[in-house]
Image (spheres, helix red, strand yellow):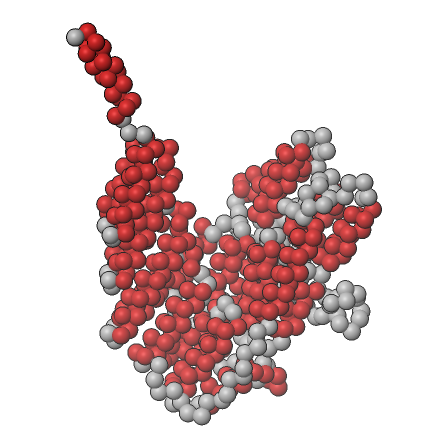
Amino acid sequence: MKQLATILLIACLLAPSAWSANPNEVVNNLFKEAQKARSQHKYDDAIQLYQRIVTEHPEREAEAQSRIADALFEKAQAAANDHKYDDAIQLYQRIEKEHPEREAYAQGGMAGALFAEAQAAVNDHKFDDAVHLYERILVELPDVAPDSWYNAQRNIAETLAKKGDLAEAAKAVHLCLDGAPNPYTFNDSIILAANILSALDKKVDRANQFLAFQQSGPAGGATNPMDSIGYPALPNREQAFETMLKQAGDTPAASRLRAYTFLFTGKPKEALPQFADEFRRSSDFRDLQQASLDLIVGLRAARGQNLDLDKAIQFVLYGPNGPDGKPKTPDDLADPFAELLPAPPPAGDGGLAELSADDLASLRKVRDACLLYAGDPWVDGNLRYHSFAVLQRINIALDNWGATGQKDWYLEHAFEFNNLNDIIPSMLAAARDRELNFGGVYPLLNEIDARIAAQKDSPPTNGIEKARTQFDAMCAEIKKQSTTKIPPIKPLTQPATSF
């Protein structure tokens, strides 16, 4: 009897550890159960399971929250597929609010739902409803600019034409011509504008005058017929864009957004300085490639046509001395921006971001501290290297690239490191000297090569060739994307009658 009691006692003592489930197994099973619910389109059940994980297993909260966002996306997409567009939009808005790291994706999904709902309204001949829905894409969704903004504006113009309001359609397509983000969309806008003009006039004369202006520019005193068309009155859009501008920030992407708000409100000459601001702030190669292409968009919009843009991109790539890098030689290039832009603001004043005095003061303090740490060889190497990284972000915020002595400062201190991978982009930005071209970059690359050759004992080995390869690839891509040849558009022979 005593032996049996002992066995039972041992069993009871061991029971909690023997019978309790492994915590990792429990949470993994919850994840599997939630995934199964999603595969069965039971999104609310899945979300409840993920929320249970958040509560009961906080160590897996980040993963569970990410899966909640995924489930909400799937539920929103299912609602849109079922033509329940309002439900889909509310779900995307929930994602935007509860999962701000997914904001851009949520806005992309919202744009898709609005496009689909608007197209359904067009199909039902509810043209005013469609225009309102397309307008929401522009005024509510800054993260989908400029491509979805362009598509929405184009659809507004076409919808107005379908409705028969050709005068307003002509004004609306004028915004498409300004805001087209690449050569293909600009060409598309030209065709739509010509058709709308011909339908408005019930003859092709003014439409063909417009097409001729696009081919030849203002040669011989030719004028752009769109100038007399003007732009639509858009007070609600203006107000929404004003709010966007206040919240945009101090990055190249913020400058780009500001520029497109001007393009899509009929202010192309105010957009070009913002594109210049974007270019001056850029140091990352991807940002710089986009900024270079955007400069051409801004120039085209300010001129109203795309003639000689290949010369403009040559100027951006090589600067006033041209490909040979030597002044007063046959390949020298004229500055296409000079007559359209004011002088750039002083380095370190925040550019066109309209930073407050307090923000400027704080950023300058951080800049000065970073210069102190990064430039002191007695400071810990990791701290110095991270100071260079922070300094890069501060120079972007302050629009400080090309400040007096900046290039020489980088040359003096960067070569104290073996790895220049994260420092070279800042050096190249400083070398541009606040100009809207890469003319100053090539001498700096030559100087870097000379210093490496002279530093025979322990020259930097990482980052140089990678940066040079990235720079060359960026320039090739800029040239390719900006000089895309579009076949000439033939003159119209009869007015357009349908859209």
